[in-house]
Image 1 (cartoon, rainbow, N blue to C red):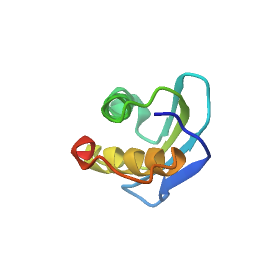
Image 2: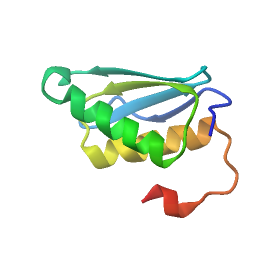
Image 3: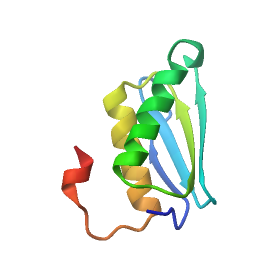
Image 4: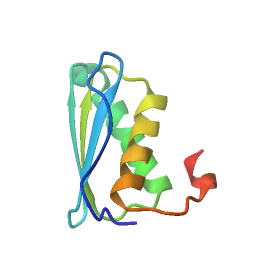
Length: 96
């Protein structure tokens, strides 16, 4: 799956995150977080595993985290990627 257009998901409220995706050659992940020192590696791991589940091969993913839980990170990444890839029919089994 490739990101075809810019897309957003999430908010910048406390305990949430904003995920921005845009076209790119290859995968590039940028994580900006208030808790980056403590949880930056975990945030990146959740993003990478979510991208792998969705078979994303190309895209720039920018995460602006405000202390979100792993389940929120996964949901926001899924939403932004599906919007950016212009997916019209979902394979719900990949969203578990």
